[in-house]
Length: 145
Image 1 (cartoon, rainbow, N blue to C red):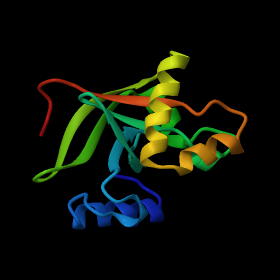
Image 2 (cartoon, helix red, strand yellow; image 1 turned 60 degrees about the horizontal axis):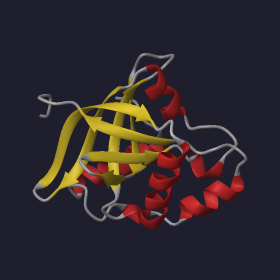
Image 3 (cartoon, rainbow, N blue to C red; image 1 turned 45 degrees about the horizontal axis):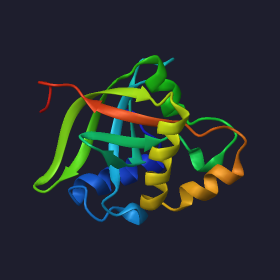
């Protein structure tokens, strides 16, 4: 699977520490593996995450850059993804459907929840004119491993 050198280091630390206490993100990190929109290759990206019920939530912030992150374009083109998250017993991988939150009210509610987890999201929102997307990662039933 393809990943940038920084992401490779973070992914290795995630696995080494079984998802706990990873870098500056602590326990609020998941690994999202999506198929590249152009390359077709599987690409893994570590992302700050939250939960909403049984679903995981991620934010396409790119640190407040003017454009969305590459992973966001990948999940829009190929919403069938794999998620690896920390659990009480280590980590768990499962298949998921990535869904961009379309409702502004729902997006704002979830974004506010994510700011509580990662306060820098509030700053990122101030740095850009784009509306930073929020994505729900909905577990696909019967496909955990």
